[in-house]
Every structure is written in structure tokens, then in C-alpha cells.
Image 1 (tube, rainbow, N blue to C red):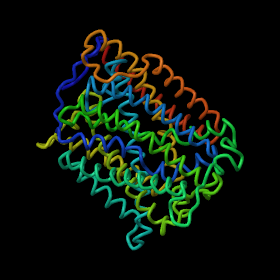
Image 2 (cartoon, helix red, strand yellow; image 1 turned 120 degrees about the horizontal axis):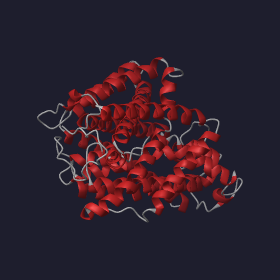
Image 3 (cartoon, rainbow, N blue to C red; image 1 turned 90 degrees about the vertical axis):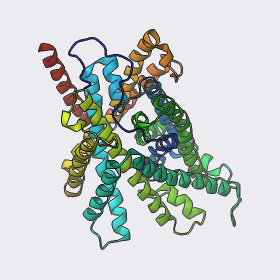
Image 4 (spheres, one colour; image 1 turned 135 degrees about the vertical axis):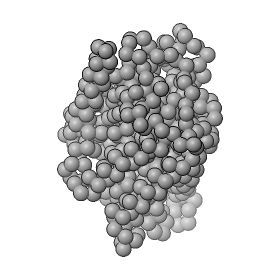
Length: 465
């Protein structure tokens, strides 16, 4: 149906019509962009960044957020010009060849279905704490069945699920920021203005120097993963080019505000050494300003965040593998689409592998699943790198062949694109030098190399026919 010819001729720029539904609205895409990256990594994982960077974590989030914004701007430019359910996999194929589309598509699919297991297990662990009479595995089964059903139904159901889940997360962040600013200003009962003591005391703003800021970047950069799904979802909206441009513009600035604003509130209100290891810094702040049952409130927020990410990842993985099937890079049987425009076999294939990942996580969390998790640990950086390289190639081609398609443009092209590539290379080098991160880079590099090798063999065989 969409098989690329086994020649070096680049595929046409003009997007082909998608057989999928167009039930997503602008509000769905905007909230998907906002909610996609506001997850447990922010609410819990940010504590690791604060522990190594101190108040300098604000700078770490600014640097990591700036990189994510550049990637999203590149992706938004290409997706507005050429909307497709495979998004950056399709762009990579058009820019670099079939091997690139195959590689980035399958790597991203593998990333989503493995991370899905972490989210399902985490949500089940919280639910089991609330209702211990239901085993953890049973909660996993309930979540997988519910969200599979939501994704098998009309796409607008997925959109509504994600709209309200993301709305709850965004609402929680806004409320946290409002309470934090009020506490800093001394507007809450029994509070005095905090001043700058926690930013300048306890070793200063950079207690561990710029090395701490860099370590903070390594700890938080992957928290921005998930924004990419909005460009996949845009293909199922009424006006994908216009909608993806608007969603990208609104999401990246607001997310940077939420992340950096949250960190600034936390390190201004509390000494950076205050949160206990493993404790959510958000819980520590809420406890400090006297919010009752802060831990349980944050458990609810994290629970919603995990289910939201599970829902979005199941959606994104099914559309990516469907797009691969369209282009002859996955079994053709996955192309079956329901009367409502839902790729049901692609959904079932993704949830089946996701469920296998969950079982591995429950049975062998410290062995088999740990290897799988390490194998996708740095994949996001490889995907982002291919997005940047694709944008470098496609931008020139679009300007030459169809400049009217450039409704959203990358800032400072090509210099900022090259700067983003250099930044990602630097992050990978720093991860290699860091003993804790090195296994992720090595395993992810091996997984990427294996997928690229398969892609090249397939392309060589296609050219030989």
C-alpha cells in the first residue's frame, strides 16, 4: 500500500491520505502535548536531580528543556509539512532512506512497549497499597484491559481519556505552583516570606559546581520524552498541519514553565538537602507548608500520571507499528482498520508485547527486564538525533520543492539544529563516562546497532531483487 521502491529515489514529499479516523480535536492534541511529559519522572525522579545539582537543578532543567524544545520545533516543522501517523519514522525515511525509517520506527516502538511495563507495574504497586486484597498482577491485568478497550474504540475515546488525565496532572502542577508562590511570599497562614536563604545557603546556588548541573541534566533529560506522541496523534485530527503546529507552539513553552517553575519553588522553599532519598520533593514541599495527607495526595497524582503515560504509550506504539506496516516494514496483517478508523491489530500487537514486558518486570525485574530497560535507556537520544538529521535534510528539500509546506519553521536553521546534535552527542559521551549511566548507553547502542543492521540487510536484499 505504501511500500517504498527499492531504489535511491526519494519518496514524494506530499503526504498520502491516512485510512485512520480523524476524531482528535485541537484540545486533545494540546493537552496530549502538555500531559505527555508530566509524569512520575517529574514528581518522583526530580529528587535525584536535586540531590546532585542542588538549587542548580533549575539550570539543569533549563538546559534539558531547551534541548527538548529544539527537538520539538524540528519535529513540528516536519510534521506540519508532512503529517503522518508514523511522524518522525516517515520523515527519516524520506530524508535518509528506508533503513532510517525502519530503524527509528522499530526503536521507538520497542521503547514505548518496554516503558509501558514500568508504568503499569508502578500504577499497580500504588493500587495494591490502597486495596491490598487485589494482587499486583491483577491490577496490571485490569489496567491493560481497560486501556486496550479504550484504544480499540474510536480514537476520540483515547483523546477524551488523555484529555482528562492530562488535565488532572496540569491542574496539580498549577495548584502546586500557586501554593508554592504563596508560601514563598508568606501569604499562607503561619508562614513568613522565605527570601533567598535556601538558594544561597547550604553550599550556595551551585553546591557541587557546574559538574553538579551537568549531572542534573543527565538525571532529568529523559523526563522530556513523550512530547513526540503529539506529532503522531496529529495525523488523526481534522487539520493535522495546522493542529500540530499549534500544539507544538503551546506545549513546549508551557512544559518548560511547569518544570522550571516547579524546581524553582522546591529549592526556594526547602534546603536542597531536605528531601529524604527516594522521597518526592513535591511531597516534602507540601508537608513543609502544612498540606494534610500530602503523601497520599501525591500518590493519587502519580497514579494518574502513570495511567496517562500508559494510555499515551499504547496509542503511540500502535500508530507507529501501523505506519511501519503501511510502508512494508512490518507485517501487512497489521494494516487492518476497523470501520471507525482504528488499527485494531496494531493495538493488539502492541499491547501483547507490552503485556509480555509487564510479566518480565513482575517475574525478573533485576535480570531479564533490567536488560530490556537498559536496552531502551538511551534510545530516546538516538531517536532525537535522527529527528535532527532528518530535519537538516528535509528542510533543504522542502525549500526547494514545496516551500508553501513550511508553515512552522525551525528557529535559527541550520545552526540550532547542529547545536542540538552536538548537545545530544555530549550527553551520550557524559553518560558513557558516568558509571551509573554507562550500561544504558552500551545496551541501547547494541540494540540500535542490531536494528540498523537488520534495516541495512533488508535494504540490500531489496536492491538485489
